[in-house]
Length: 234
Ligand SMILES: Nc1nc2c(ncn2[C@@H]2O[C@H](COP(=O)(O)OP(=O)(O)OP(=O)(O)O)[C@@H](O)[C@H]2O)c(=O)[nH]1
Image 1 (cartoon, rainbow, N blue to C red):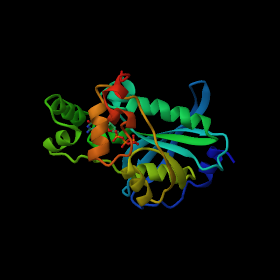
Image 2 (image 1 turned 45 degrees about the horizontal axis):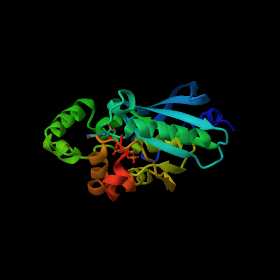
Image 3 (image 1 turned 180 degrees about the horizontal axis):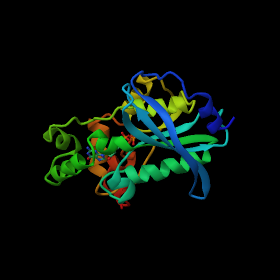
Image 4 (image 1 turned 135 degrees about the horizontal axis):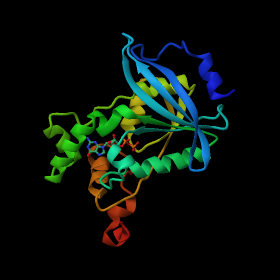
């Protein structure tokens, strides 16, 4: 059965959360890296019917019965679009898409509301300004009076439920993301590590993710083995 047919079958599915419901608003074919994928736009509506947010899914589905490899990617305008080397987001996006395309079933959920770990673009750039002055990624958020982590994974979970993907393999180094999805009824069968580019500019950020934010292996192990091993850092 195709994904489109599956979606047709379950428009009135009860939500896992009760408070938000994902609705497929539009879909089309999209050629990406030489392969045709399916792009879908989901709208999340709150309990009062108010439109809450949009989520984009990019789906490769040669075998919809297989457990999908999923990347829940938090929007990062600076990294994903502008090519910033301050974070690893843009590179992770490319790596994730390549891996999803070679699996029989896979999907990337692009979380538009997650920009800046949920604080939004303006506040993220304000946080970057504080980082220019010496704050790390955690201190900068806190000094703005904002949480270090402001994302939730309700919308992602709702879209996965609607796509009949209650059990997934997840591309992430972030245990919070797994917890966030599992809280909302998605089972993460395997965590699949994902490595972006290491640059001089993002090394400290990746170290902070591992050492202060509980990520697993965001910074490649060889970086910690001394200057010789890091000579090829671009
Ligand atoms: N507030 C803030 N957000 C940032 C910063 N650098 C990147 N981001 C945002 O962080 C989000 C990506 O989150 P990460 O914690 O890097 O990675 P993750 O998606 O949680 O974990 P992985 O799945 O392992 O990649 C994106 O929304 C980026 O815009 C920063 O210094 N401050």
